[in-house]
Length: 312
Image: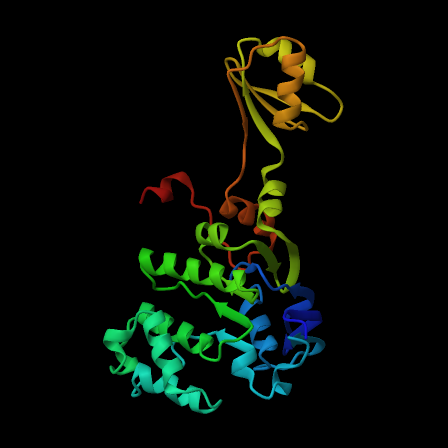
């Protein structure tokens, strides 16, 4: 059976509001797929549709070849964290996991393993209602992994975690993907997604904006800009300029070149015996790439302050 998440023309209305708009994508096993979008873009709704917590208005979505409801033992198929606080506040972390385990015939040994894995051993017998946000996230991740599922889906799993916890989640997700599992994770922390996700699905206002590798996503946003520093700037500018190439003077001896790769520029300079002191492809950060791509899809934009307001 295929281990993946497949959405086809997925659409969801809440009254007149279209939260998800004809969304189609496939989340493949063996890689960490990041799910990105501005607030209100439909990420959480999409995840709820995958787990059939909401019914689509049209379209379809399956996990591992079946609808979620059709899996006889869903915890063994899909592990999900959508809301870390959805626990009985009077129950201990251990008993929360044990209650879930007993619905699927999972033994206490697995509960003990997960308590240790997520670092809750010292607080396992304490009431979950007293947990910090970060501790709640660790408990939610433990619950998601309880059935040793082939597909893992986490919504904002690093919220409330300290740097050590964020690093732990990164290594955990990449390790799960390396085992051949399907890993689908949303986050607002772009710097962390750039280190964790191999592939990105980006949505805005419920529509798919991008579905590509993280490297390709960043490369497209970077626009192929190369910085070149040379004492022979005028000669190099004349050499490189052409119909599909833009060369702009950015300072004394410094050129910004678009339309050619660093390799092409270096080889052209060498062939014409021009000296280069710097040849640096410029790459946007994932955050910059995300902001560029989703600029028109942000539902709530902060007002731009006038200069005199900005200093108040």
